[in-house]
Image (tube, helix red, strand yellow):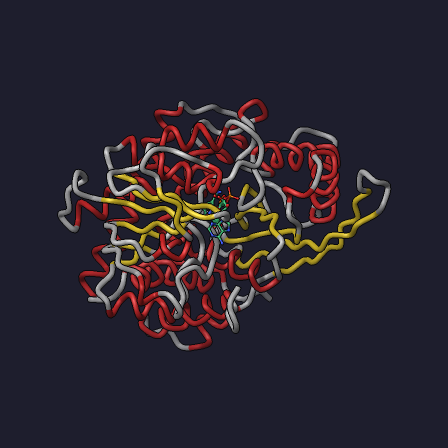
Length: 420
Ligand code: NAD
C-alpha cells in the first residue's frame, strides 16, 4: 500500500490539526490518540485438505467514550494492526460527526476469503468470533460487515456468540440476514448514504443532476450500490471499476446490466464484462477521468501524492475509508476540488447498523420506508452542519467534519473524566 503509508499516522495528524484549531491543550486530547484496547488473535483452521493454517486476526476498540465500540470486520490479505487501528479511529469520528451514540472499533483477519471454501470460511469466522468474544457484545462492541465480509458472515458470528452465551443475542452484530434480526435496507445503506450525499453536494454547489457525470472505483457492497442508486436517481455513471480494472462509456454505462452481470455467478470480475461502446480502462485511468464526481469505494491510499495531480473531478466523494492521503488532500484542496470526507460520506452503513441494533435490543421491527427516511434525515443534517462549518470558517469539509467530531469525542471524555 505505498512506501511509508501508515493510515494510523494519517488519522493522528488530522486529529491533531482539528484539536489545535479547536484550541484544545494537548492534555485534553492526549487520550484519544491511542486505541483503548487492542486484541490480536491467532486463529487455527483445519483446512479441507486436512492441514492446519493459522490466520492472524484483530479486534481494536479505539474509543467507547460516546457509547459501545462499533465497526466492521475486514477479511483481506492486506489487513494489519495499524490499518485496523486507523479504521477503528475513523469509526469513532464517523459516529460522532453524524451524532449517533457509539464509539469506534474495527476488526480484521489477514486472509483472502475468495481462496477459502465455504466450510473453511465458516470455521475461520466461528473460531475468530470465539476468540474475540470476551470483548464484544451488544453493550460493549458491535461488529458489522466490511471489505470481504457480508451478511452470511455476520450470521455465523451472531450464532457463535449466541451459542457461547447460551441464548440468542441478535444485537451482538449488525448487517445480519433479515431472518435473524437484520434491518431492512442495511445492505444498501452505505451506498444509499453516499447517494444522498452526492445529491446534497450537487445541490449546495448548484450543479444540476442532468449534467453530472460520475466515476466509481470499487464495485463491491458500497460501490455497486452507489452506482446503482445514482443511476436510478438519473445521474450518468460513466465509469466503474473493481480490483481487475475498469469500464468506461462517456454516454453512460448500463449500470443495471453490469449489476446483473456481477451478481449472477461467483467471483465475477469487471474485466470479463463486454458490451457495445464499453471501453476497458485501468484503475489509475478511472481516477483521472474528467467527471463531476469521483467516488473511491475500494480501499485506503488510492488517491495519494503520486496521482493526486491527475484527478480532474470537481468533487471527490469518499465512499471508502481513507481513500485520500493527507498529502493528496492538500493537492486536491489547492486544485479547488471539493472533497467530501469518508467519516461523513460513508456513514450510512453505521447509521442503519445503529437502527438495526436499536431494533434488536428493543425487540421491534421498523419498515424499510422508516429506515430510509431516518437515514436521509440524519445524513442530510450532518452534511449541512459540516458544509456550513466548512464555508463559514473557510476550511475543507474534512477539517470541518473533524472539528465537529473531535469536539464531541473530547467533550464526552471530559464529562466522564479519567477514572480513577
Ligand atoms: P467489498 O469487499 O464488498 O468490495 C470492495 C471492492 O473494491 C471490490 O469490488 C473489489 O474488487 C474492489 N477493489 C479492491 N481492491 C481494489 C483496487 N486496488 N482497485 C480498485 N478496486 C479494488 O467492500 P465494501 O464493503 O464495498 O467496502 C469498500 C470500502 O467502503 C472500504 O473502504 C470499506 O471500509 C468502506 N465502507 C464499507 C461499509 C459497508 O457497509 N460495507 C461501510 C462504510 C465504509
